[in-house]
Length: 49
Image 1: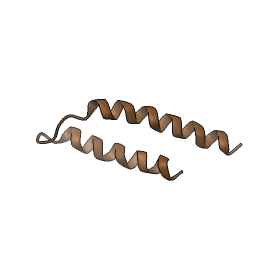
Image 2: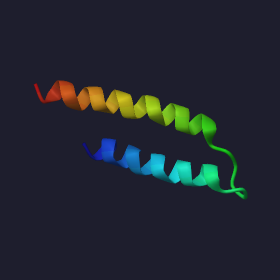
Image 3: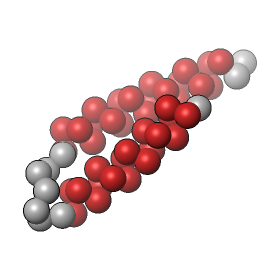
Image 4: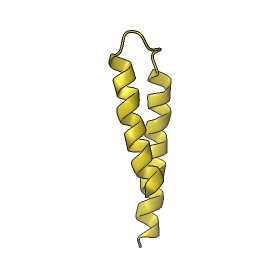
């Protein structure tokens, strides 16, 4: 659960970087993070059963 929450927080910061003109564009990181969040969500839901 902690990793899942941390991934969502990381997503927030990456989206903030996307809006900044002075920081590099982390578009690729956002795509990878989406996959990680989905994977963690599936792991959490399967362990609750």
